[in-house]
Length: 177
Image 1: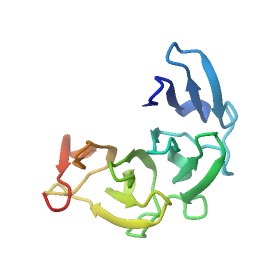
Image 2: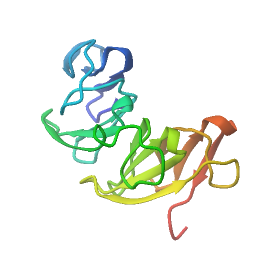
Image 3: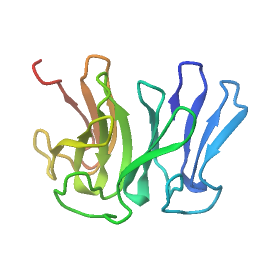
Image 4: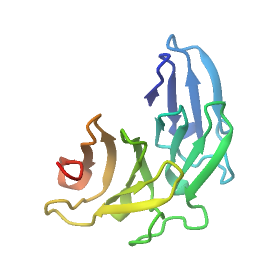
């Protein structure tokens, strides 16, 4: 779930394969996707897991089982996607491909961070979706994950990621700090 500056909420409705936009009082505004229908096209979802808002009000959706990120304009128009469906459930170090996207977050500079569950890593992208870097890898050592489930970024750029299999939250300082 993500809260907009006006208090409205964006909710990833996992089992209904949709994203809902609600007023702060809970009243329905709009939705993306068709309730109960799995799809692979722009604006269609396969178990969405998370949402985030970009600095310009863009809606980012972690389209979990489609192994991709989708981006929508503040007016709700589909802008772009990266990851699957052609690169669906790809295990390994391929830049910009995912094996189940579980979380998405936007950093203070607008960069996008994505939890890549079965690839045991976090990937970082520009606001336009261009791959920048990835970090993590499978294991239980410093900086390694056993199934990355969530990611969030503090205003100073500090990144927090949950490491499901190792029962911990890891903290990554911004470069230069």
